[in-house]
Image (cartoon, one colour):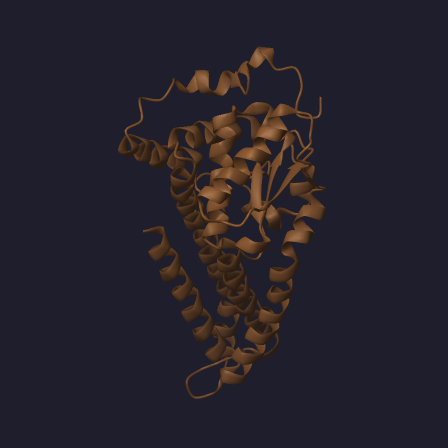
Amino acid sequence: MNQTKTFILLAAMTALFGAVGYMVGGTGGMIVALAVAAAMNLFAYWNADKMVLRHFRAQEVDPRHPDPRVHAYLEDTLNMARDAGLPPPKVYIIDNPQPNAFATGRNPDNAAVAATTGLLSLLSRDEIRGVMAHELAHVKNRDTLTMTVTATIAGAIGMLANFAMFFGARDSEGRPNLIGGLLIMILAPLAASLVQMAISRAREYEADRIGAEIGGDPEALARALQKIEAYAKQRLNVDAERNPAMAHLFIINPLAGRGADNLFSTHPATQNRISQLMDLARRFGRPAPRPAQAAVNDGPWGPRDNVRGGPWG
């Protein structure tokens, strides 16, 4: 269902690009805008993983890391990747108190996954497995490629809107159309952004579903999402706030100002995701989940009160 939704949204964005391009610059203008946007996003596609990991100061996990939680995180991630038929990704850790995680890389052969120290401190081992299974699902689904294509078309539409600001739009007979130019300048980038965000939300739902299959435990992912949502609101992610454009990479929106599952959000509402995962759990024949409050209060090695330090001590 989400795959179909993604295809329909991409088709809608392509149609929007065609309509705007024809009104503003004709076939020549469309080709120029698409070529420039493609060049910019091709560079991002090949270099985004390095840029993102550097921005968040991620450190690749050493297999000899002394902390058992970090070692288990590395081992479980590599084992799940192998069982899912994926090449082993590079596994990173980010020294940040906000619980969160993301995947990056242009394809499965060049994939990297990263989790914060806050996430490793907060979640139990099976919940961490659930989160990393979700990130491996993004790798398996080649969502980096999907979002690069989306960003390319959206960027081309934005450039055409800028053309409209300087040159205006034209009607069917080739005459200048001031009102049409203003509407394109304002509405076209907005419409492209809305479609882009809708595609991002669809990919999150799909990664939840595939991640539940990779990890084999939808409930663990549901509990993890519930905990991350509760604690992420209390921890400011300074690096994410400095570059909000990277927010869509994370399993939960890392920004302080976040909304529900609406037109302007890059992530679905967490409760909606949890509900879908619990439906999957029932299909898997899992027992009823623990009470929500208990799930939030538990730490990775028992009750939250017993947790003294994170993976760094």
